[in-house]
Image 1 (cartoon, rainbow, N blue to C red):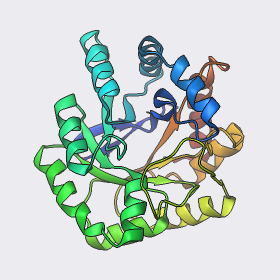
Image 2 (image 1 turned 45 degrees about the horizontal axis):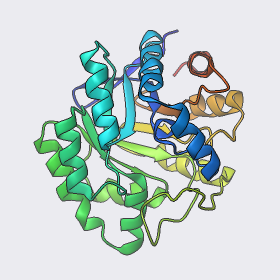
Image 3 (image 1 turned 90 degrees about the horizontal axis):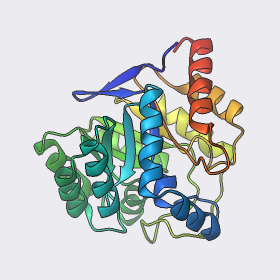
Image 4 (image 1 turned 60 degrees about the vertical axis):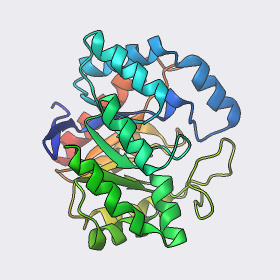
Length: 268
């Protein structure tokens, strides 16, 4: 079977979305691995990976909104690339409004509020900052969403937000109570009970969900991980997976095949 698509707003989104963390050097493993990823993923290698994704039927990437990715996508599209970009607002680059402005100017087709920021605003009691941001994305004609690692983010959103999609992390790997940003080398934990808690919440969410961190940043066995995803992926949902091809050139193709295999077995 083909991987298929879902609908987010007016966009057709492939059910396998290629993630941007490795492109930006976010390994969630160690500072040394972060640097290795940044050195490996030159502009030309990222574009090569995106073209491979196109050939496999993937039509969407989620990457943070920074100046490097904006320039890269403009170059890639000028060269005939067709993958659409969902821009993830990035606390390290600026506040919500700057992230949205950069996503609009950079050609993103949709925009979402960063998961670490949503966790932080929840902890700080400042989630009232989010509805105006969602309205601003919508006013620009783009589907709007939020990400998060804490299931309570989505329980709040169901009662207080009108979004087009959610992006739900399987793991709440590090507290974001004091700061929203991911810091290279910060202590992280990837516990099975976090994954179970998030998919329990996903079952009852009213919007399409993009499942992410499904591989626990390379810690999970791919067979087990994609079998679990297929079991919990609703018909309206997709999965986002980061790819690091330095030591595993066929990783993207193999991951797509696993998703196809397990979705076919689950008939989802």
